[in-house]
Length: 338
Image (cartoon, rainbow, N blue to C red):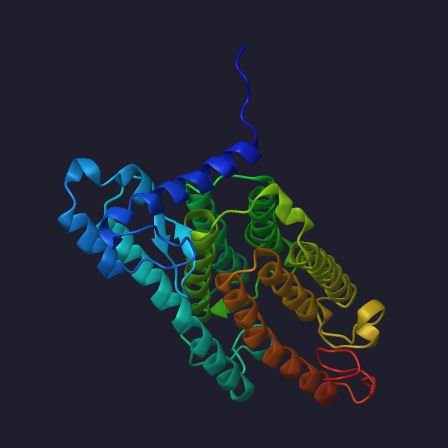
């Protein structure tokens, strides 16, 4: 009778494989290797150059590769070359560390220049495409790229990792295949420039998060469900997701009642803030960063705030400008604060 292998056994096998790889580096370092000590790219290259091919244990070494910050992480399966691994690792780290100053720059720029779509659409930003097509082309690649890394990843598909995959796809499948077709006014459009910028961000963001979770991370054992960061992160994500959906539904209903004209929304979180939909999305991806406990997730959370916080402030000013009766106690994004 064949015994099924549990995800705990798969994860432990994965960790043992990493330990074996450390052991086989002792002939190069001249002693046992501390599993917490990073192995540099140069050291790995010298080891592979000096050690006979049949003694390199590529089947064990290739899945192990250092991530920035000294944390050792799983890498490509053994059929990938070490050169390809180094190229991918370099690309990942460059994109990761560039993402933070770019997010800060974007935040500052958007405080002075409001992105020209929706109520702020204006000439001078290139040809126009329909909102439905634009949102689909921007958001669908994020779901597909993430799914691609899920399919090729060698990190064990434990329950926490499957949950992360489900949450990501839940958000982006809705954004790409549901939300665009809920737009009532089919005549609305957006500049091609905005579509291209959104597409570039989503491709890079899906690459960073998909690469980390399914190729670079140490994996997420079942016990990850009991970690404080997982519990808090999933609570934030779920709360933000529900707030975002409720707020969007409220706005759609309001526009439908008023022939797609902008009106003052009321009820629920709209009593305290002008943009609970943006607040929900910031909570959502902040929760993602906490639950995955990763720099890639943190990058996404920072970018979400950098993009949506200035737009929430712009919406708040717009409401005050066009509606003299707009509630004075209402804030832009954070209840009672800002």
